[in-house]
Length: 328
Ligand code: MG
Image (cartoon, rainbow, N blue to C red):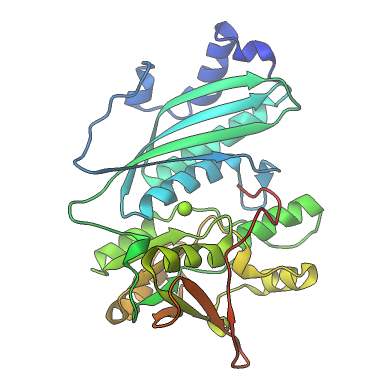
């Protein structure tokens, strides 16, 4: 079935679209009430976030826009130490979109929400003129345990920088799809609950944490350096990049430091916690290739440096503008 403007009318066709494609897949007691807003049990301190997903193609190696929209929002909650609980999703569907593709996207969202332990408790659909595109906004709420503070402003000289796995995979998968390049690269799109939970369970004091998305590791670490007024030094030789992505970057002249992931996090922890943190990350799903990639040093505040393999040092600036196509 092709989606038509009638599916966005607010009448019977809209109701059929919502029930047949979304509600039965996202089913839970809160959503089933179909009220104007979801009423849910709360917590003392909550984290909230929202993100819009406009990636093309909507289906890519290793995932689709549905999985991405749940992972992106869940991961943003996790990065502040929150336990993700509830999501809302708004679909903007262009006329001509295929209902089977929508069902596939909704299946992925439901499956990823289960994996990440969140409920989709409210949603909206709009149908607009267009060429069959699908866009999703997800908002998320998470509960922050009492006393837990994770913030980019807390990095200090002596801390170490850990990365949960290979750089650049999501970005390389999207670019490969768009350019029609055949390779084995898959998006790393994944919810990071297990890694984060493992860190806290091990008693690691996580000072700052971010998922490495648009703008890449270079941009995240510049944000850390600026927010905490510190200097971060990376060791190029220690940056985990798969052979496939290394090869892909080499051919296209891309730098993995600026390429987005959708299932990797960078964490700053105290040096004495480094080994414990690495073990915790490696024991978790999606964290097998975690590595220590650098440290916070006394140097020019607000800067990120990389020590190259041949002993030189260069400054790593943040990504300026939108260098590459939409990846999320
Ligand atoms: Mg983020």
